[in-house]
Length: 403
Image 1 (cartoon, rainbow, N blue to C red):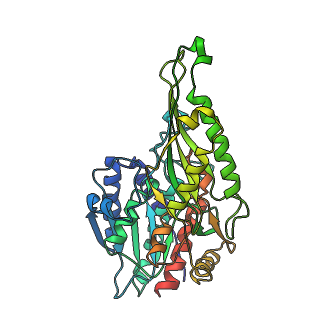
Image 2: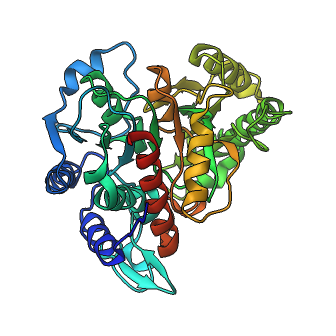
Image 3: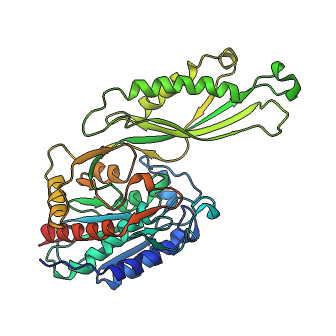
């Protein structure tokens, strides 16, 4: 089949998507789903746009958690015509992380798409609005020619736990297989590590900075805790299983807040970070091992004044395509049909919505334009030809699965 991707329409779609500053919990996170619904309807799909019942989802025992305040959220699914369960789901999240300092971006505002050296720049172009517009381009190219149904799931909240996909699945939308258009650097991600967000609270003894030796600094104590956590990190990342590479479930501290006055010994510190969870490991077991490592920090003060550990935010379980499942090979064949080299199946160290589809029995992989190193970065960018190649891949996959 001759598949033609209109790059001008892809550019138009991406410019419109990027213009929505759809940071988790914002009004734009709501508005962007309305744009998706209208666009999918314009492509001839039957669209289900519904308000997520956040209270009900948060009360569910499998609720994946959130890291932002959210009073309103919407689900959006487009389904093509034809009887039966969709033969393929194409999933993309339309929420993004904050852009950081605007003046650090070069060339344009982060919410304005701009092009330089055959790449598109803007917040979300890599993670993962570039993948979303590739999905739209594939549907535009071949959707009207297919005989079996397919579905497009656009979701919110992926960055802070995955409540959008959680709500979509709870709403009854499913399929025979799912491809998530996350950036994968030309490979097929067939397994994800899990992740938890930890919060550490340390209490010390304040005094005037000129008498620092009489106080107990929480900044100094934190280094003892981090030393213990580094030992745990090393232990947990010895000889990871295939298809994962080196250090697939690291421990990373992302936020440290301490002190209120430059000449006062800081007596209160809060640190938050990410803790990788291994496949087959329960959250309870992972948290217990972490908390034990914190207790083992070599500091006399901490033995009398233990660190308080809590677990806010999203909970990403590990997930994987079942070993030997043919869907990974189907996607690899579609990549080749679009002119790419046959990709490898790999494991990724980060959590994603893959685990939510996998948990319901839907075989799922990730394949999309860009590389995870550019996700969340200043001057986030994606190569134009990668977006187009992925659109062609999705189109070939639609044809192979939907006839």
